[in-house]
Amino acid sequence: MAQMMATALMGSAYDVIVPVPLHKSRFVQRRFNQSILLAKGLAKHTGKPIEAFVLEKKRATESQGGLNRKERFRNVGGVFKIPPEKRTAIEGKRVLLIDDVLTTGATASSCAKALKKAGALEVGVVAFARVGQPVKG
Image (tube, rainbow, N blue to C red; front, side, top):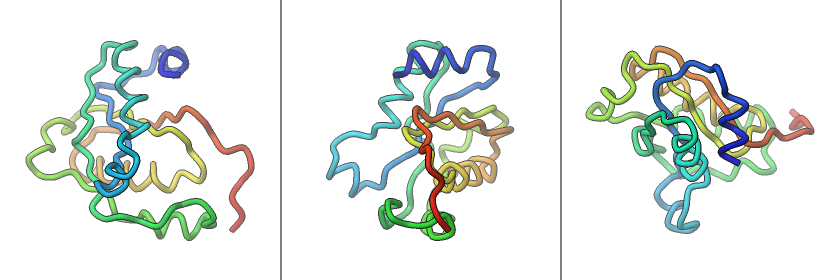
């Protein structure tokens, strides 16, 4: 999957790869973060550095499944942060945010806002899959 993403990104300009984080409780439950796995594979195929833990999820949120567009944006609004000591990893850089699935863009938007607030020059987003049917609402 990462190789397919790398092919799709050929010619894209970015400096660092940042995966969408899981909250600690969700990570303990799953024991893996699919976005980190994709980001590691993409880093291997592109030679770009990965900053797997620069972006943090401050609190656990309700599952996005079953929520409409407005509810999804509200659910993840302001939930991501970059601790001050980790900002140098993204300040002035073009960040490529990695997620596994993009539905409404609520998670990506919330992450991008946090990255820009912490000094990212620009933020691009790539996901392996896109939900085909729009979420109602």
